[in-house]
Length: 180
Image 1 (tube, rainbow, N blue to C red):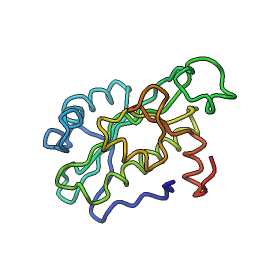
Image 2: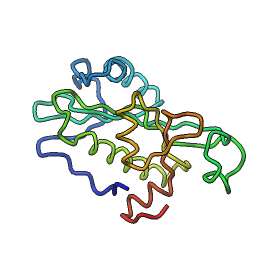
Image 3: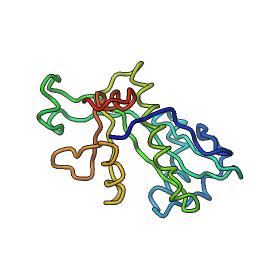
Image 4: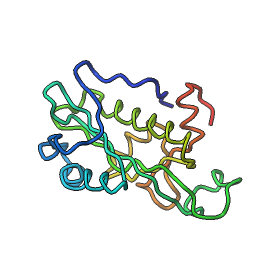
């Protein structure tokens, strides 16, 4: 299990909430869907209070990476049986890691791990105000699934590319112990 510690980005990099003046359209990570989200939809969704996007800027103020968080719901019946033992049988609140990408020019430098760690810290911070049972995400491919599985995300039954991380596991990651 990865332990989420205080996230320190490399020197010269800074994380900011997405603004109109960030160079969104010049971001290219190798996935058209991830690029298009940042270029054309992230700011509009943020302005409508549907999600929040944070961009990691490099020394030249180019977008080196980003992630988008939102809230959502998951149906009780979509969760694993061992996870739902003491939960009400209804639609349940979740945090959603909607998007995460690292620009091609910055891939292989560990920025994806840093961005995910910060996104999870943001979710944990939000959980102090808004309750949810898990962080969920949808993987765009097998490589993404492998990446998230390293952080103890698990498959939702019947949805091999939809993964979840329980709040209990997230809290344990933040505390640095291996318990559930």
